[in-house]
Length: 108
Image 1 (cartoon, rainbow, N blue to C red):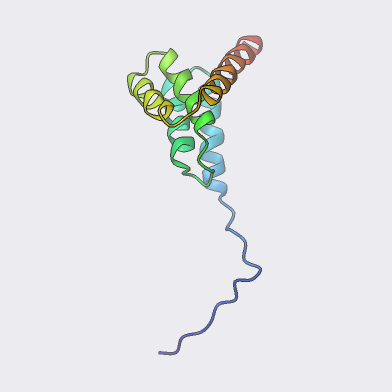
Image 2: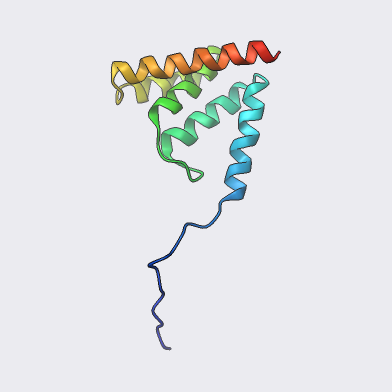
């Protein structure tokens, strides 16, 4: 067996169309009031899965939206990540959640 070097100087990450579609589907479901979709978006942002960077503000926003609809696990996750966030970050996440709700009411 012969090993061959792989050129990586101009390497780019592979396009992740399926992950983009999954996130878009979840956002669509969340816009229709699906608490589970909001929870799953929170998981994606809190873990940095599906090719997104970990963003606790974004995760908190989605967990907050799910928890507001009675999703108990989302409320627990929101509490867990809050321990790693500053008061300003939490306030920003709450502002984004309120903004999302306001935009959803306008489109309804």
